[in-house]
Image: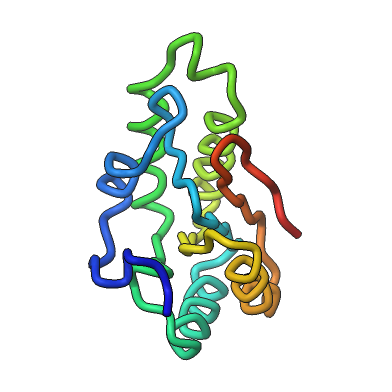
Length: 144
């Protein structure tokens, strides 16, 4: 019903960064949404909604502020060259890091097609969120 990732257990945030395609080394999970929530409670509530709707941990993984902070800091420190700074992906990771610094929480949701994205957004919009980044092959789109 969902992506082929459904059989893969949730990865740590560090492993997630390491195993996804990158933009000059910067985290770039093509075919996914990265959603930031102001509070862990909001992320947990929406994560529960995704699970109730049939998503698995691999389709919709939840990450706490500490996990994302460590992963984002490592990713940015290891990829601070000129080319990495050219794209929007480094700024997106900096946005993730900023929210992690405020104890936000995150969902990474597999949503490759427009219908998958709209289905996910219907669930996400149930509570206030800080941002939704949709990773296309060549562009990061901010959704509302």
